[in-house]
Length: 267
Image (cartoon, rainbow, N blue to C red; front, side):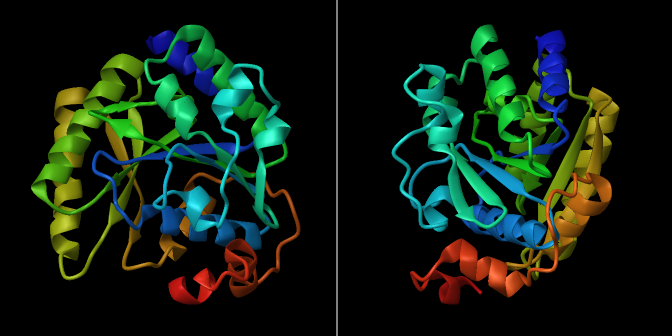
């Protein structure tokens, strides 16, 4: 399992795009909106972004961008369509790939499916600067698609249960996928900022002592802001420059959310 996972990550990273899977032991209801805004800002910085959305329903990135997908990455794997058929151009520089059914059907990580999934996503990121996977997590297990990403970022919220569940996720990924380093995104809801940072410090020292795993702080998100995550990606996990920069964030967000009125409700 460890050799296979490492091989998939090498395959996933061979095409130039920086692949980052974001997973949460306990789902943050606002995360999809934050990820959409992050993609918009990255696009305004000249990076083409592919979002692979393993979630379904109103709390998914696909729904937030105003899309109703007819097809899923699952349909590509069973031969009903091609990858080009399922790609959704959500905004200039931003492509969404619906993958909720694929994540559900292939949750057990069959070897041939995992390899095909990594190859498929390598193709998806062929002309992108970033591939951002909004991954599902079920009792500490993540999809083979998320496991194939070069970087695994765990999203840590406040509360002892979140820390405990996140540690269990880290342990499973270390033991069964051979990961020794992780990125951490702190969801920092004031006035509990100090508690969240303390939780990260405790989690980091525990992971180092018992698992020989290193946790790197990627970003801290307060309220709906995403600037720290964008800067963390650009400075610590740089993706390829794939397009002209200079688009303002407001213009990019309007393109992302369209004329549905959703833009005004979230900015």
